[in-house]
Length: 91
Image (cartoon, rainbow, N blue to C red; front, side):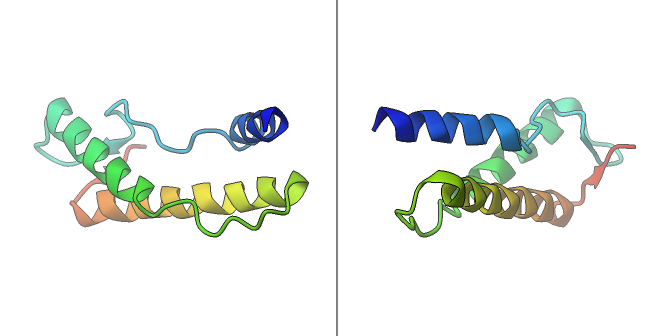
């Protein structure tokens, strides 16, 4: 169990956190910082509701790949949510 937790931690470090909730990555004309932050948090919540997907119980590098796919799905869901709320990525 300890090895599995270490593997997950290593995978998280290798793939990195794709969601930036500082309120500076997205912009919308007339939106204040607080508005951006509120929508970002709501979109992040929706993205994490997607869930982890199937657990293949294979371990090792296959789990790292599965986690990378999961994070990619969540990042895409977050981006789609922000875009549908009328925000664009900052330059």
